[in-house]
Length: 256
Image 1: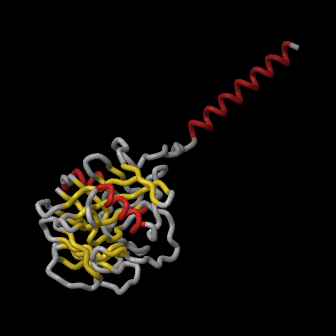
Image 2: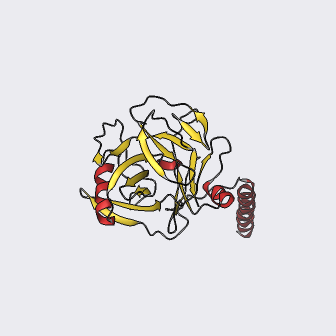
Image 3: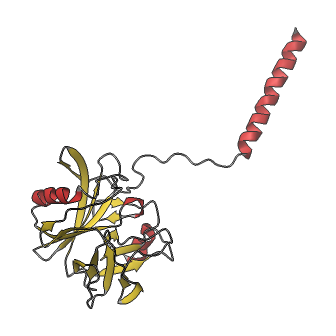
């Protein structure tokens, strides 16, 4: 009986040693990311309900006395945190879209230098244009002018105060970033997400109604509005919220 007990405890000890060695030889396994790791500051997003669906939003105002630096990022692939530090951005957002080939979709001009030509596209049917002073405007695709920054993007959501009817295929809920101009000469860069997930949000078709509702609450009048790159390749930073990207941002809009 004693001999059997000795053999049994020896087997248990040997098994424990083998298990410890096997565990120490495994590569480190990443832990699942906790919810809301995309936000690095207190979550102070405002909430609103439109057509029975809840949304969270925030924005920052842009006027002509702010300095804008548009930053092309598809070659260097820097993070938003790097950009904020290197360029001392007070406000930051993502800009235009890029394709699976890693190149911009449509017209892109930065600091007066054309990096990508205009393409005719029903979805990316507008352009965000800017002067070095930071003044933003929304124009139709293909419009030419002496602008420091030109970003072809879309779709256009409002034009001359009128909401656009959007015929969009494969319209999925996504985090949305947009530029909204108003009749007081200012622009707002806005983020809209789901209250439950920073990676989800409204469909494109629902944006005009949501923007109208937010404009009523925030007491401004919409002149023009256009969609920017959203989803996981988008970023938004103002004085209250910093919502980070999960993928490379193609172009940054850095305001000082």
